[in-house]
Image (cartoon, rainbow, N blue to C red; front, side):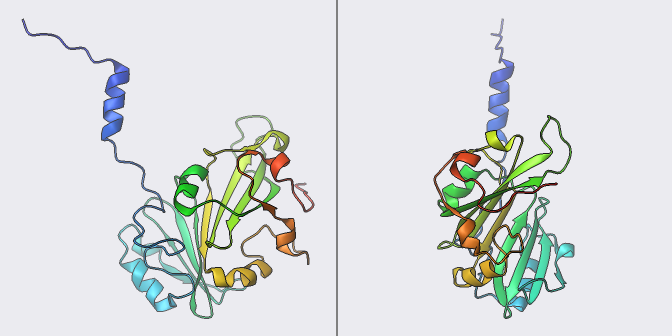
Length: 231
């Protein structure tokens, strides 16, 4: 009689999981060091080269690449989608790439992002209304966390649902937006309200920032330094 081998459901699931490809994020296989992405270098790459690079990048959906109207401080903008569903934009100053922004379905946690990009240097927080659904009471309010590294040229943005007084920034917190920029443009972009949470005031954006102090309760480590109004 042949021996009968019984593999438990847990073991089978673990073996199957090991065969599954790891989720590829916007920080994988970029071909250059951030803030560069797929050969688009903030501060250097021209509008014409941006279109050429995107058209030859396999994970960019070609039909989504398009120029859109200028906005704010930006003279030109090019939007596109990755095949994974991530929406992205390259914003230009003086005919060259200045900011590359990625939103939606990034598949990134704070821990994963900082492992590649390094630690943030500054943090700003605020409150906003969350998008539905609202599975738990109080989920209609989100704590906004914006973490920047001016010297490295990146920004991470997260929305944390629930009671702001209990909201925690954790290594596992999901990053909902990532931006890369030319560090030489930092002061121009901040003055134009392009990187931080802007309330339309004349207050210096850096005055509402905290130095990065790691993970923990947001309202204890990084209380808002500007009025919070979500009515």
